[in-house]
Length: 187
Image (tube, one colour):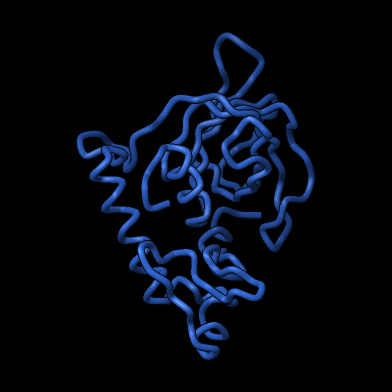
C-alpha cells in the first residue's frame, strides 16, 4: 500500500457519531446536537463527515485548545509539541481498505506522542513511504485503541537492533485520543 493511498483514506463514519438509540453527536461540548435523519445519512454515517459543520467546528476548537494549552509548537519546525512517554504498541501492515492485516511487531512502543503523530521504536525495519496500523496496549489511557498512519521517516537505532519510525496520524480519532491523554479539555 502506498502513502498516496493515505490521502484517499477516510473513516467509514464520523468518530463522534454514536450508533444506538441516542443518535447523538459527541463532538458537541456544552450542549446537545441531535442531527436530523437527512444529516445523519449524508454526514454522520458516511466518509463525508469531514464536511459536517459540527465536525469542522470541533476540529477548529481542537486547534484553538491545543494552542491555548501549549500543545502547538509555534517556534519549531513541528506542528505540535511532543510528549515523551512509553506505551506498548502492536504494529500491523494494512490491507487495501486501510485495516490492520499482518502483525509486523507485537513488542513495539512509543517514544513520544503529539496531536499529529507518534514516534515509535520497533524490531522491524519498515521503510517509508508506507501506511501502517497500530494498536495501543492496556497501558494507554484508551486500551486497544487502533489507528492508521503514514510512515514519514525510519532510522536504525545506533545502540540497539531496533528502528525508530515517525508516523503521522491518518484521522482525527487519534488526535482526539492523544488530546484526551494530554489532558486537553475539549477532547
